[in-house]
Length: 225
Ligand code: DX5
Ligand code: ZN
Image (cartoon, rainbow, N blue to C red):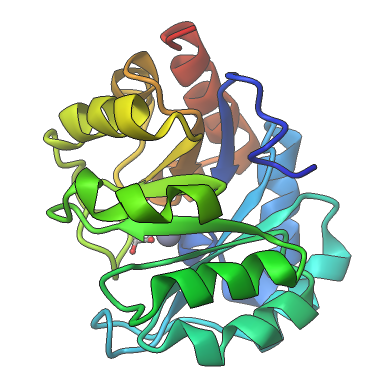
């Protein structure tokens, strides 16, 4: 049971907290939920793996009791193993790590699952889909970065579409897409099999409920079934 294992081929969407107002994080997440969000995407950055610093397990632990949505942690950090126990304690529902930053990926994914969360890999734009073939038995989802991780508000990289198609073929896993997702790009990724739409600036640039709803509907209108 979990966000990704329960998907059943449908398309869902959720807000990336990076574009939210951190002083009113739970309120902003609640607004996106009113627009049909199925999860919250929680971006952790360490200023080493990516050139930016965001929030960590303490903020996740504060947020979890204030939302009934599953919190999906995206760890853009070096040495993720040292932070995973704290994120599990915080009560997140799923954790994705970058294989580019994990030295022993099998051990890292096992740590996530053993802690009761769903385990994912997050792939940088130029990381090959084939990289994860031997990790498939230990994975619940793949998070495809459609921008270089580190910042919100960047433009969607069009090569992502072919990459999602390939990942769908070789993994059969739920595919989440993160970076530059808008009402225009959501249909492009859903058409080739993306199930989980993460959107930051496109949600929080206006009324989060309305923007979230439009992005989800745009994806569902073009979903590959
Ligand atoms: C990028 C983060 C994303 C980011 C997406 O490093 O992983 O989750 O918030 O932001 P937008 O939707 O603005 O591209
Ligand atoms: Zn992210």
